[in-house]
Length: 494
Image (cartoon, helix red, strand yellow):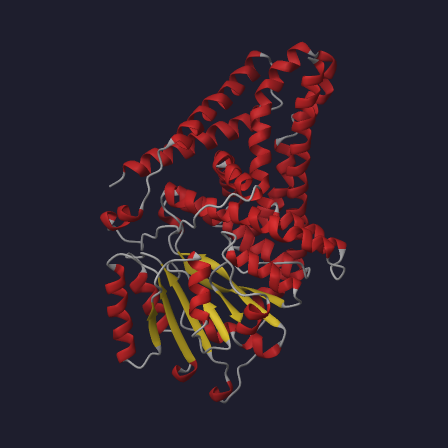
């Protein structure tokens, strides 16, 4: 039996080390970002030529699929971009199958009558999903540069004027990525916590990676590509669910530069319903694992990349595997409490196991930097700690869902692209419901059982007078309970 107990401890320890390594990597990026954030956020954009005829032609691509609630809004926002009309083309890449097609057609016709070069591009099928739509549109694009906005984005009129000049200053610049803003951050606690996590990515991680000359990624929207970069990197490919991350790595491995602009904000909606959040999280985490499977070997075989960049790229591509580690640690932690009662000679090892939550300590600096640079919503440092704990708890509560997505991605199991339904910040519940899948399923039942399982860990901690893993079990119990609560609540909403 002692061999089994040691195996459990070894597995737990390996997961703990993985989580700690991820946390330290994010902390290191925080240090890089701290030196660069002010300069990146305040540096003025290079000037555009005085003669507008010298400005590069830009194609704006708007990939949409059944976006009844937001399709008119994104068309209007694109048509309002402040750029010379004779140098701007807008493509609505519309794969829709519902009445949003007619709504979009009417809005496109309205702007065409005003002199805007805009067209609704329809394909015979949805092959390749978003990647296929972008590739199809690129074949008829007239721009040297290609700006991409998902349906839930609302770019400001000056977006192109703030991003295009960087391409004129650097002939090897392949992408300019901007920061995401949040139109509905205050809608609910769920959207607030999503904003909290995304702000860390956009205010710290992207800044740190860019400052250290490490791999960053185009975030799928809110950015501009040089068309030649897309073509030389092999074009849009649909063999992963994160075609943006995939193309980003191919382009940077090919020697193209990326530029991240934290001062330029592209506002967008956050998923307000749990099933929408699940679909987004599944796509991001599975796609990230698929991209790691596709490119990590190539990164390590590259003689041109320094070791530090390879390590950061590994942390970048495998960051979603943290959910697998957290889930496995949680599952092992309860039997480890029981094992301790039969093997007191291993007590020192169990005390080390109690460092589970401490492994997340480096992340405090990472998220606090984003909180501070975002203005510290609430204007009080005291508000940060509960927000961080709630965010970590919900993230842990999604570890089953996201961990399974990662494992299927690493295994190469193909699944369809499921887009995130958008609400349009409206009260048109019937419209939103048409695009919703519901959230209560077998996985929700498993999550409820896991909430009970980790609650059992809390009970054992008091029963055995062993509190080393109590904070970990509290976060897991609360996180899984919250995920189940939101899943059931949102599934019942009209």
